[in-house]
Amino acid sequence: MDTVDIIEKKIHPDGEPYYFNTETKEKYGEIVGSLAWPEATEGFLVVAAVDFSENTELEARHIRVLTKANESDIGNFLKHALALQKHFSPFMETIKFYGDTTSLTMMGLLDQFNKDRRQRGLSPFYLTEAPQLKDPQRLEFYAQLIRKYTQPGRKILHFCDTALPSYLMDLSSNEIGENVLDRPPVEALSYALAVLSTWRPRKRGTETKGK
Image (cartoon, rainbow, N blue to C red; front, side, top):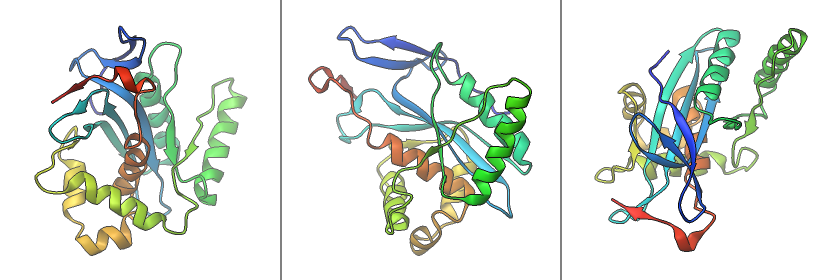
């Protein structure tokens, strides 16, 4: 398992809640997990966060991939997702994991996994539908997100290691539009970006900004 950070939930002096990374001292507005489980290759998951403060020069919030994992066995894959979900969830709170809930294969495997856990008195793993999944233009939607956060000279997407950047570098501009959801690492990242890119503080008048 990749090295992970300890997250605490804190309240800004103005009352706005945020997540605090005790190792890096970073403040996040939101943390989510996302996963992709194909039928023929390894599953891939990420946990990512969006900065609480906006970068005033770039007029955007940095998004940071905190950890990632890949696994070929569905049982181990979902157990790993549960472990990371627990580790990155502050006390008395559970971060959401997003994925393709329209996949009959994925949901069937998840149902069986949860059935087995319930029989043993263990809590199930819940998967939330990723944004725009049922939209006919979903491929273009996710392709635009990948292009936005990987455009040269605009460093607002940060990775925990070199694995994900290498997957992205293998995609040409045309392939991003055609295959963005066909490669598990890119698919999982796309779901996280779709959620985090829309996060804003609830109290807009008290939003802090920084570089």
